[in-house]
Image (cartoon, rainbow, N blue to C red; front, top):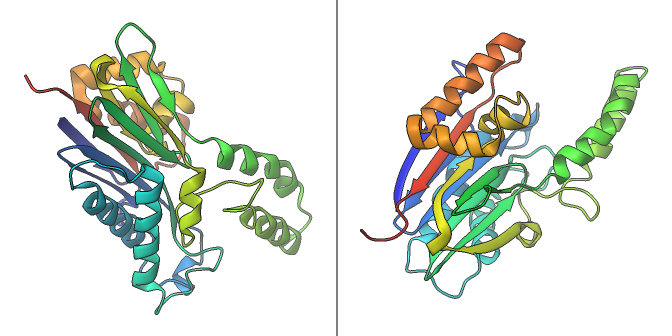
Length: 264
């Protein structure tokens, strides 16, 4: 498998809270999620959490593919990272670091995938439109709170509504991310496609997926074409131009582009 990655921090002087990496049979992208005030409950920070989770997951994926499912591997990675800072940080606090995750693994004749949260995975298939995988629950749940947040009469009311929203994370009827509870991995969107019909795959943080999802610069077929011709940098450059044009603050943007799934 040939892998090309680009990751661009959204804010100069602030750490990039995305992580991506690959081993011969798998690729991982982790998009760290921070909430203001998290430093009061976790001394490590969101970037540390994303890097530690991504590195742990890659180590678990590195051996030859076998029986462990992708949710089981993600659950073990969450458990290990949580244990690594449980003694120094309040890992269960609602504002402690969390992350969304995308994984692609070659496993025999199949390419297995997993998406937890609002990362994106686009699979370019022979003779068909790209299969785009994401988990929209956080976007849907958060969007349902926007009218109440905008109408809040004062800071106290705003805080109460925001706490209620945060309580929906990793809870039935809410949305799911990697944080401190390994059971969240069971809520990931998973599947497999035959490698013989797969020409390329792209893992994107939501900051990079703005190319399609927010700015509507093109559809997913065009994204895959840009990746094939200009690589991940071409897509991220388009996102940065659109952010500047619309006056939208930049977000961390990361893409991992995977091709050449079979030996020549």
